[in-house]
Length: 476
Image 1 (cartoon, rainbow, N blue to C red):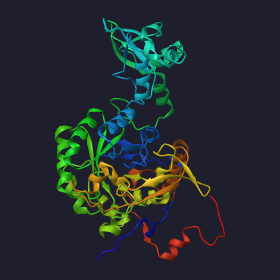
Image 2: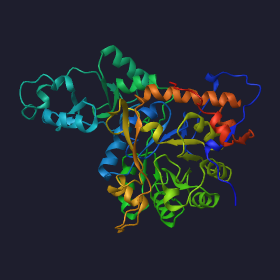
Image 3: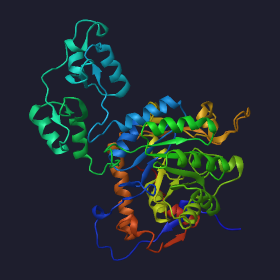
Image 4: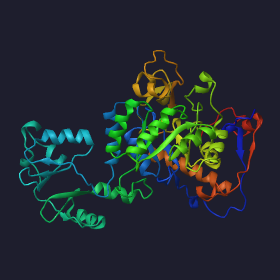
């Protein structure tokens, strides 16, 4: 019988001859065989962790998110689409309105997509004849349903030809002091749209995780192994999702292989992350089936009770090391991470990225409202195997067979402390990880596999010494 170790059971030994600063540490890594990230951080597909807002902000900073499937197909597709439309080099299929539409349609489109400026098309000729935005809607006296777009649209607007560059568009937008720039062909038909917000986003976030072909932010989506999710897969693929995560508490099943085969057969350009697994045998089965990355972890999340309920799982440090040493695809360490030191350990043990749940559930962009309890600002956080989460169909399919009437919870519901907005919280987290790499004398993630891991097992007393102790009170 072998020993199963957690992250806290081990301590990494420092490196020697450090000749670089924290700023020199490069955390670029592989999410899948075909997708690169500038930060090794992935948000978990949980309904109290990942929202479109969090997915956008995390991707802007170099990580990536997975939109959960504990919701309807339409809602999940809408969330993926919202992320994809946030940042564009050029908007290839801009949403338009006709000049005979009412302003109510403009208002409805704004609510649906989150932006308010649209090119106006002459429905007879098909050419661009104007631009309409919230400025044209805010100060009307009549009901929006009674006002036609053509009566308020701006007809004095600049356009450029289709062979224009992004830099040239930026120059025109600045000179003309407009937010949006239609790109037309020689006959005046709309081809693309350039937006000042997108150009500013590109400049302000050089590490953003983007699809190089579309210049849009990358985002993934979770799907279950049940046949009912074939329709979900089809709609998500059509919406432009960058990768799928087959979401199962135990990924070593025939059902996961069948789902993987379906995706590969119909959408072979979309990468698939499989799991969850904890053994070499499980991982190799999925890699042989065509998995582009493996998700490692079973029963070790702060809100997961699988190991207690089922008696099955593995210590996460042992699982990550064993799987990462045996497969030739990227490995995602999922669960058991509650501080930056554990992120460093997961990556040093061979993981290419870490999937975070509780560490992101408290940020402002995560779903749910903040509330106060005993003077502490909190947010809800629940396991996808909790009784509350399994009231939704998606979570039921993750843990149950269709038709089961008895619900066996494999998680709990709880709260986490509020952490403020992600743009403020994440840089501190990333810098702490870089400090860890500097102490290990690892300048980049790419050096980790070729550098021997020096670590020791800690006694309970050593674990205690490594944490805050012997103080009457303390604060961070």
